[in-house]
Image 1 (spheres, rainbow, N blue to C red):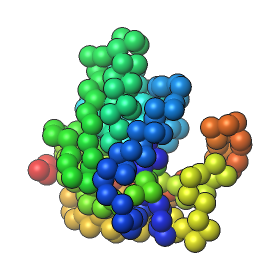
Image 2 (image 1 turned 180 degrees about the horizontal axis):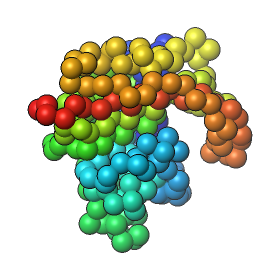
Image 3 (image 1 turned 30 degrees about the vertical axis):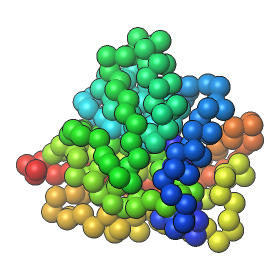
Image 4 (image 1 turned 180 degrees about the vertical axis):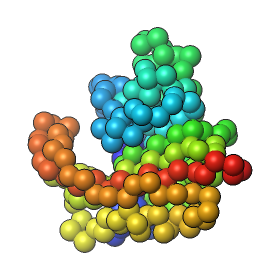
Length: 225
């Protein structure tokens, strides 16, 4: 999911209600032709050295990250606001023989959150043009980690030519700003990574551009509940 917009890239202030967000993402995913493509590279880089366990994919979108995790031994709960997205990701998991490793749930994360405890929570480009209390959602995600679990947040650090948000005044909060907004007790959560790597990216129509990612990786301390 490329699930916040407006004046910051994360905490939108939009007068439209949740029904508008549902309609927006339903239109977006109903027009999609391919499902379960490549995983986000920073998710694969982070998860590869970890022991597979239970993962939560926030805003699973077309399912590339969900299916990559399932192929690599994880049991994944994939959530999205779009019923089309979760239905098609579930169907694609079944086609690939991964149905026993993937559970999909439709959630508007502004009003609810999936139950369970997780070893990895992934929030890849968790932005939307609609109002969303993003920091509260991500704080809830951190608290859903098992001891020793990881929360990976990858945000846009620059505006790609194909981005739906071309506002020249948009602010892309740096990883340390995102971490500060989460207000997590450093005695219980440790920031393992907070940086801004550049990479060459390809857009939906084949455009190529250098983009900046903001990466935040947090681990919950062992022995905490």
